[in-house]
Length: 211
Image (cartoon, rainbow, N blue to C red):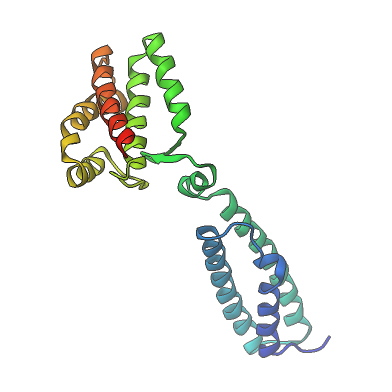
Protein backbone atom coordinates (compact mmCIF):
# COMPACT_ATOMS: atom_id res chain seq x y z
CA UNK A 1 0.00 0.00 0.00
CA UNK A 2 1.12 3.58 -0.66
CA UNK A 3 2.83 5.45 2.12
CA UNK A 4 0.64 8.13 3.75
CA UNK A 5 2.44 11.39 4.42
CA UNK A 6 1.92 13.63 7.43
CA UNK A 7 0.30 16.30 5.21
CA UNK A 8 -2.03 13.78 3.56
CA UNK A 9 -3.15 12.49 6.95
CA UNK A 10 -3.98 15.97 8.23
CA UNK A 11 -5.88 16.78 5.01
CA UNK A 12 -7.84 13.56 5.37
CA UNK A 13 -8.82 14.39 8.95
CA UNK A 14 -9.97 17.88 7.90
CA UNK A 15 -12.03 16.43 5.04
CA UNK A 16 -13.76 13.93 7.35
CA UNK A 17 -14.64 16.60 9.91
CA UNK A 18 -15.89 18.95 7.22
CA UNK A 19 -18.45 16.59 5.71
CA UNK A 20 -21.95 18.03 5.56
CA UNK A 21 -23.59 15.32 7.65
CA UNK A 22 -21.36 16.23 10.58
CA UNK A 23 -21.87 19.99 10.32
CA UNK A 24 -25.56 20.36 9.54
CA UNK A 25 -27.70 20.89 12.64
CA UNK A 26 -31.38 21.83 13.00
CA UNK A 27 -30.84 23.69 16.25
CA UNK A 28 -29.40 27.21 16.12
CA UNK A 29 -27.75 29.30 18.79
CA UNK A 30 -26.42 27.62 21.92
CA UNK A 31 -26.76 24.11 20.52
CA UNK A 32 -24.93 24.91 17.28
CA UNK A 33 -22.09 26.54 19.19
CA UNK A 34 -21.82 23.51 21.48
CA UNK A 35 -21.55 21.15 18.51
CA UNK A 36 -18.98 23.43 16.88
CA UNK A 37 -16.85 23.35 20.02
CA UNK A 38 -17.02 19.55 20.09
CA UNK A 39 -16.00 19.32 16.44
CA UNK A 40 -13.12 21.75 16.93
CA UNK A 41 -11.83 19.81 19.93
CA UNK A 42 -12.01 16.46 18.12
CA UNK A 43 -10.35 17.95 15.04
CA UNK A 44 -7.50 19.27 17.15
CA UNK A 45 -6.99 15.89 18.82
CA UNK A 46 -7.09 14.03 15.51
CA UNK A 47 -4.61 16.42 13.96
CA UNK A 48 -2.13 15.88 16.76
CA UNK A 49 -2.62 12.10 16.75
CA UNK A 50 -2.15 11.88 12.99
CA UNK A 51 0.94 14.08 13.17
CA UNK A 52 2.44 11.84 15.86
CA UNK A 53 1.71 8.66 13.90
CA UNK A 54 2.74 9.79 10.46
CA UNK A 55 5.63 11.91 11.61
CA UNK A 56 7.57 8.78 12.37
CA UNK A 57 5.76 5.92 10.64
CA UNK A 58 4.10 5.24 7.31
CA UNK A 59 3.41 2.51 4.83
CA UNK A 60 0.84 -0.23 5.27
CA UNK A 61 0.97 -0.17 9.08
CA UNK A 62 0.42 3.56 9.17
CA UNK A 63 -2.47 3.34 6.70
CA UNK A 64 -4.18 0.64 8.75
CA UNK A 65 -3.90 2.71 11.90
CA UNK A 66 -5.31 5.72 10.03
CA UNK A 67 -8.36 3.74 8.89
CA UNK A 68 -9.06 2.53 12.42
CA UNK A 69 -8.73 6.06 13.79
CA UNK A 70 -11.03 7.52 11.14
CA UNK A 71 -13.73 4.93 11.83
CA UNK A 72 -13.41 5.65 15.54
CA UNK A 73 -13.58 9.41 14.88
CA UNK A 74 -16.79 9.00 12.88
CA UNK A 75 -18.43 7.09 15.71
CA UNK A 76 -17.20 9.59 18.27
CA UNK A 77 -18.60 12.50 16.25
CA UNK A 78 -21.99 10.84 15.92
CA UNK A 79 -22.08 10.16 19.67
CA UNK A 80 -21.03 13.74 20.50
CA UNK A 81 -23.78 15.21 18.33
CA UNK A 82 -26.35 12.86 19.87
CA UNK A 83 -25.32 13.90 23.38
CA UNK A 84 -25.43 17.58 22.43
CA UNK A 85 -29.01 17.15 21.21
CA UNK A 86 -30.29 15.11 24.16
CA UNK A 87 -28.44 17.03 26.90
CA UNK A 88 -29.58 20.54 26.10
CA UNK A 89 -30.29 22.63 29.17
CA UNK A 90 -33.84 23.24 30.44
CA UNK A 91 -33.42 26.85 29.35
CA UNK A 92 -32.93 25.86 25.70
CA UNK A 93 -35.91 23.51 25.75
CA UNK A 94 -38.08 26.12 27.45
CA UNK A 95 -37.37 28.64 24.70
CA UNK A 96 -38.88 26.23 22.19
CA UNK A 97 -42.07 25.51 24.16
CA UNK A 98 -42.78 28.93 25.68
CA UNK A 99 -42.42 27.66 29.25
CA UNK A 100 -40.55 29.46 32.02
CA UNK A 101 -37.53 28.43 34.06
CA UNK A 102 -38.26 28.78 37.78
CA UNK A 103 -35.73 27.42 40.29
CA UNK A 104 -34.13 25.34 37.52
CA UNK A 105 -37.44 23.68 36.60
CA UNK A 106 -39.31 24.20 33.32
CA UNK A 107 -42.88 25.17 34.18
CA UNK A 108 -45.97 26.23 32.25
CA UNK A 109 -48.12 29.00 33.79
CA UNK A 110 -51.43 27.36 32.86
CA UNK A 111 -50.35 24.05 34.36
CA UNK A 112 -49.18 25.75 37.57
CA UNK A 113 -52.52 27.54 37.85
CA UNK A 114 -54.41 24.27 37.46
CA UNK A 115 -52.15 22.44 39.93
CA UNK A 116 -52.54 25.18 42.52
CA UNK A 117 -56.34 25.12 42.21
CA UNK A 118 -56.44 21.32 42.46
CA UNK A 119 -54.21 21.26 45.55
CA UNK A 120 -56.23 23.99 47.25
CA UNK A 121 -59.44 22.08 46.58
CA UNK A 122 -57.89 18.92 48.05
CA UNK A 123 -56.37 20.71 51.04
CA UNK A 124 -52.83 19.85 49.97
CA UNK A 125 -51.35 23.08 51.27
CA UNK A 126 -47.68 22.23 50.81
CA UNK A 127 -48.11 21.48 47.10
CA UNK A 128 -50.45 24.46 46.69
CA UNK A 129 -47.90 26.85 48.23
CA UNK A 130 -45.11 25.55 46.00
CA UNK A 131 -47.20 25.81 42.83
CA UNK A 132 -48.56 29.22 43.81
CA UNK A 133 -45.17 30.72 44.63
CA UNK A 134 -43.70 29.42 41.39
CA UNK A 135 -46.64 31.02 39.62
CA UNK A 136 -45.81 34.31 41.33
CA UNK A 137 -42.24 34.09 39.98
CA UNK A 138 -43.69 33.63 36.49
CA UNK A 139 -45.72 36.78 37.13
CA UNK A 140 -42.58 38.68 38.13
CA UNK A 141 -40.80 37.54 34.97
CA UNK A 142 -43.73 38.41 32.71
CA UNK A 143 -44.00 41.86 34.32
CA UNK A 144 -40.27 42.44 33.63
CA UNK A 145 -39.62 42.85 37.34
CA UNK A 146 -37.32 39.84 37.50
CA UNK A 147 -35.22 38.02 34.94
CA UNK A 148 -35.52 34.36 33.98
CA UNK A 149 -32.16 33.00 35.11
CA UNK A 150 -31.25 29.36 35.73
CA UNK A 151 -30.11 28.87 39.31
CA UNK A 152 -31.82 32.01 40.64
CA UNK A 153 -32.87 31.80 44.31
CA UNK A 154 -35.62 33.49 46.30
CA UNK A 155 -32.99 35.99 47.40
CA UNK A 156 -32.08 36.80 43.80
CA UNK A 157 -35.71 37.51 42.96
CA UNK A 158 -36.04 39.59 46.12
CA UNK A 159 -33.12 41.76 45.01
CA UNK A 160 -34.77 42.30 41.62
CA UNK A 161 -38.02 43.33 43.31
CA UNK A 162 -36.19 45.79 45.56
CA UNK A 163 -34.59 47.39 42.52
CA UNK A 164 -37.67 47.45 40.29
CA UNK A 165 -40.79 47.50 42.47
CA UNK A 166 -39.85 47.88 46.16
CA UNK A 167 -43.51 48.24 47.17
CA UNK A 168 -43.90 44.52 46.34
CA UNK A 169 -41.15 43.43 48.68
CA UNK A 170 -43.28 42.94 51.85
CA UNK A 171 -45.78 40.71 50.03
CA UNK A 172 -42.97 38.81 48.35
CA UNK A 173 -41.06 38.21 51.58
CA UNK A 174 -44.23 37.04 53.30
CA UNK A 175 -44.89 34.50 50.52
CA UNK A 176 -41.27 33.38 50.23
CA UNK A 177 -41.14 32.22 53.84
CA UNK A 178 -43.86 29.52 53.57
CA UNK A 179 -42.52 28.51 50.15
CA UNK A 180 -39.07 27.85 51.59
CA UNK A 181 -40.57 25.88 54.48
CA UNK A 182 -42.72 23.86 52.08
CA UNK A 183 -39.94 23.24 49.58
CA UNK A 184 -36.93 22.70 51.84
CA UNK A 185 -38.35 21.22 55.04
CA UNK A 186 -40.99 18.92 56.49
CA UNK A 187 -42.54 21.66 58.62
CA UNK A 188 -46.32 21.86 58.64
CA UNK A 189 -47.94 24.03 55.98
CA UNK A 190 -51.51 25.28 56.35
CA UNK A 191 -54.15 27.36 54.64
CA UNK A 192 -52.74 30.53 56.22
CA UNK A 193 -49.49 29.98 54.34
CA UNK A 194 -51.44 29.72 51.11
CA UNK A 195 -53.22 32.98 51.94
CA UNK A 196 -49.97 34.98 51.87
CA UNK A 197 -49.00 33.41 48.56
CA UNK A 198 -52.39 34.36 47.14
CA UNK A 199 -51.90 37.91 48.43
CA UNK A 200 -48.71 38.17 46.37
CA UNK A 201 -50.45 36.75 43.32
CA UNK A 202 -53.25 39.30 43.75
CA UNK A 203 -50.74 42.17 43.82
CA UNK A 204 -49.00 40.86 40.73
CA UNK A 205 -52.30 40.52 38.86
CA UNK A 206 -53.00 44.18 39.63
CA UNK A 207 -49.65 45.16 38.13
CA UNK A 208 -50.32 43.06 35.05
CA UNK A 209 -53.70 44.67 34.47
CA UNK A 210 -52.20 48.18 34.54
CA UNK A 211 -49.39 47.49 32.06
